[in-house]
Amino acid sequence: MLLYKQKKNQGSKGKRLLISITVLGSAGPIRFVVSEEELVAAVIDTALKSYAREGRLPILGSDLNDFLLYCPSVGSDALSPWETIGSLGARNFMLCKKPRTEKMEDDGRSTEAITRKGSGNWKAWINKSLNLKISSH
Image 1: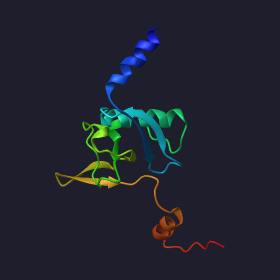
Image 2 (image 1 turned 45 degrees about the horizontal axis):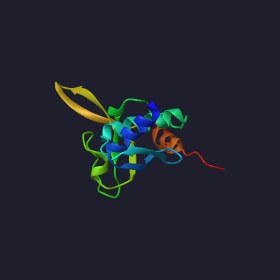
Image 3 (image 1 turned 90 degrees about the horizontal axis):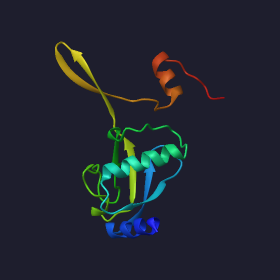
Image 4 (image 1 turned 135 degrees about the vertical axis):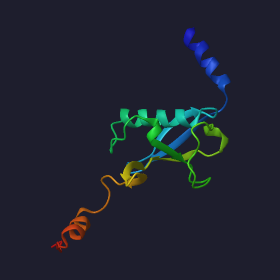
């Protein structure tokens, strides 16, 4: 009886949407059902938990503040964490990690540098660093 009442209350939240979130670098999208009034921040949190539960690679972490959610069909700007997921009318999204910034002190001035971690071709890096030619045969 208690389960029936909970299901009845869930129906009054509004429309439910099946959304698909593609994680940059992952094999395939994550799909789950959310309420259209759900905040983008809550959707990012649910996506990260689902991603970790499924044991997907690369390992992302669990801090939702490190990620941005994009809707490719609407525009190139990231969605606001306080926006509702149903306000766009879209069901396909892309989850990307925010670029890391490090503050460096330079003669009393602070500048920000964006760091890249684990990207690029290692042969190209070695060739550029050591000015050697590594053949691939």
